Length: 274
Image (cartoon, rainbow, N blue to C red; front, side, top):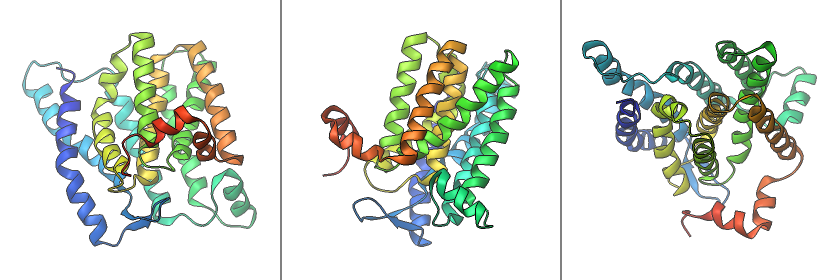
């Protein structure tokens, strides 16, 4: 029964996504992608409404029946993902020319407050709140906070080609679930995973772009999946990888590296229109 949040959210996302696409296009909310195709953006804004609408039948069933439909970790996702997605949506709507930590730092030194810095500060606040509710020592609390913040930004850096961020998210989820045998995190995050998969499909097929609202939500979910699944040692390894990805993405092109590695290039392009 704890799969019902995923099912209801999948149905809601399937119904909402075409409507949101039409609304974005009608409002002129379009942007050229890496191939110069003009696409609606940000489709990622469908993720949170679909999940929250799914809470209607889930909550009614939980309250009015004896069904156990609330996964244990649902609360973490409901607190963290909507806030992260909102910060991304603000960046989609109001972002300036500065990109990356260096660009945001230069904006701040010149007396301007970039939406990227607002997003970073808000992400840190939400990460601290969520991590403070997890069991463990103060060191574990700080470790989980760092993983949540850096995972959110890492998936934002990956979202430069259609479907790339959602593919990385799916592979991460499969790896975490198979290596640990932990399905509780999957159940708890499922209400947001379902609309991510729907929006990710449209992103992959170049029907729309996720925008920061979408990539932030995916990164937030990835971070939650890591801290809810792995112990301290596993999170340390994840943190080192995330630090490397964030630093590399700040100074080099991740896309160029992927293009130079045949296996990665094939996986990266798989499913895209030719």
